[in-house]
Image (cartoon, rainbow, N blue to C red; front, side):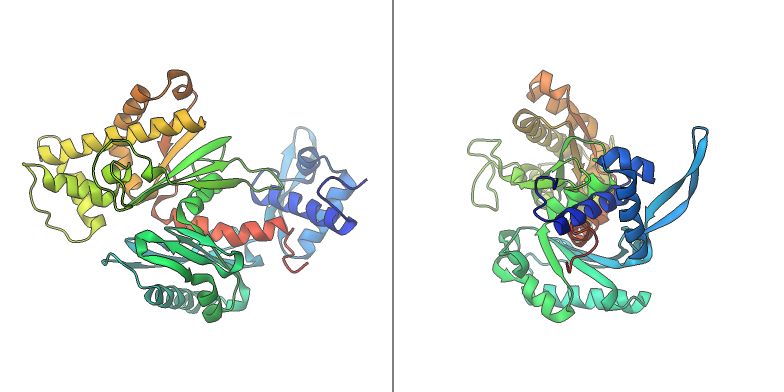
Length: 404
């Protein structure tokens, strides 16, 4: 009998390959007996599928381990040499291009700092294309060996394969980024919101690996969030983005760049934080240029006894962000809230206790008690890593045969 969702025997074979390949890739099972227990397939069926995955170069036998007195179990692992993927982070302060093998080990990275408010799409395409070609030349990886390029953007990507991007913070409306990049690079291009790619990275390789339902916050110039649901052997997990930064937390509050007032982003976004500091009567001019450099300077100034304006500004940031986290806890009831992004990486270690305390004051106690609030584990390259999961996820979903 063919299971629901599998219309033909061919569909069933693909579904079985996808389930087993995903289980091995995500580390949910490392041996044939574990795959039998996890998937419910027969030993013979698992053996046949694994043999095919090994023959196709997707999986390799990676030694053996003891099995509680029985014969040693052969360990299976995704084979890094099967192919390569590229992850691209188009941010508001930088463009980062990273080359990975398909198991998401980093091979090479290039980063271009952005110092202007509006990015021309043609400039972005040029930087991405030159970044990809430079990484391939540096590493000797052939473009034919690329399984795909994933791109994270601070906006939405629509119209499927065309990758039409709407990114108001960049001044973009209906930019056919996918088509343009594909014409230049001649490889599959997949584009998604950068908060969602960050969420998938933390769910696959970071702080959200064990979460049932995690909210991963991208805290940078803008503020976004992705709701990541735990992976299964077939679905590989899923996530949805939320315009968390534009939830209003103060009636008739600060003006937000979205056109509204009182949005969370107007209080905790990087530019908003720097502006709030400079408006403080005791503030001193910054000595550094650039948003990221000034934020690091603000953190240094917040040391006890140094700059009262810096300390007061960051105290306010912790309170406002705690309110935003409490709203997530009350609305979504996640088991985990993960603060990530470059501002999260910079301010998180300093402000996390105060953020937790503020969230506890503003959230319903029984929901707060069920939620862990912590920091991302993947650092500044998380968006690019998450973008690289896009072509990998598509490959896993097809059982490693996208052409079928």
